[in-house]
Image 1: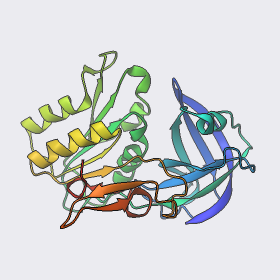
Image 2: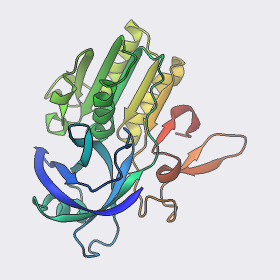
Image 3: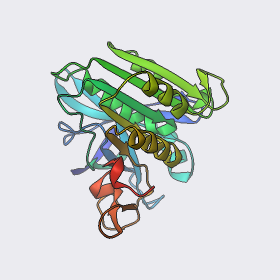
Image 4: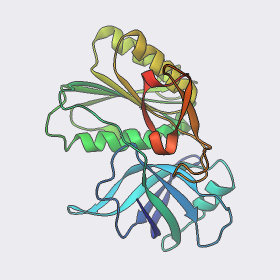
Length: 265
């Protein structure tokens, strides 16, 4: 984990209200893994005061050397509004990589990835990293959902060898009509899976976890949470977990990736 000033390489509209930001980083991300995140402050001033957390969309490489990172964000408030105004050459303060990561076992052959809205970044990063995996997957099905077609981002980057893409929108404006878990259940009814990895809104993650638990399929979920520090100091990102006695863990330090069976939904 490193605190550093990063230079904006590009800041491009990815979809309506969504932006894709490339940052040149001096060091620290060579071992970054899918599921990890960064805390970003816009500019050198303290307005807004608190950093914002963003999952890594991927790494920027020059050959084998990691030279930067990409993040994806949706404009929802003052912090992301300021971020959307950044241009190439601007400076941002970045802390990262933070948190843990998805772990796909070497013996996994049937993998399912599920993403909703701004939950796409760690799933995209994971899909890209699987191309470098020594043990080939027999099948990987990627489910991406959104309220409308405007909430579907980076879908073209899942056109990968051995990957199947299934798209759903609540209003039917693109792909199947309905929530993404509807398509997930149909696929699981037709065949087995060794692991499900998911990231998205809480309601979607709960539904995915329930489906996985009912079918006894291991499931890893990346939790999105508001946080002020990213390092366990503010205690603002607590989630309740199961055990002999009810207790809490923190998304920034213990996550953001959790075994779905550990969480109280």
